[in-house]
Length: 27
Image (cartoon, rainbow, N blue to C red):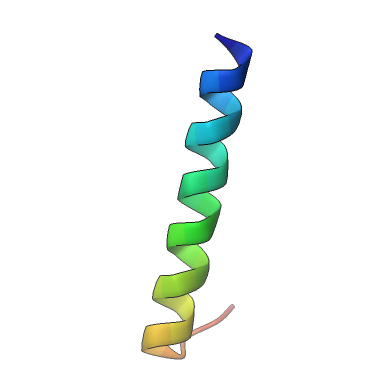
């Protein structure tokens, strides 16, 4: 279960990073 949470968190962070890169709106 913990591994699942870790994977979900990793995916969210990666997705946010990619979106930030594409939109060039990094905070």
